[in-house]
Image 1 (cartoon, rainbow, N blue to C red):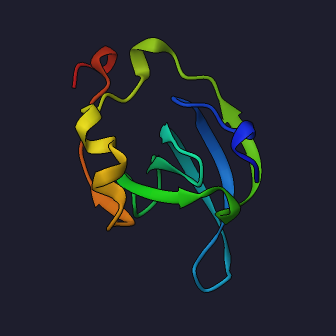
Image 2 (cartoon, rainbow, N blue to C red):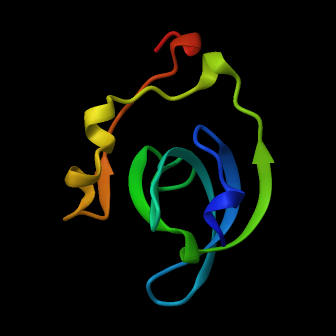
Length: 103
């Protein structure tokens, strides 16, 4: 996939290619986009809440996009999204909230 097909604060249902080459579905919320990768949050499944560093090439297909209302956007400190923090990691367990949901 190409970077231009994604938007920050977008919610996507996608097909991902795992490290083993297997295809699997995922629901993602995009927090940050850089040149070679994006920082996304799993919004369903066993990895819900997990922040991941995802290369654009790992996304095989965008199945569906969901509009994200302002009150349902995930808030996370900008310091947790800085490229320096993600140089040496591929994932991070973090909890954030959506102010409109009372969390």
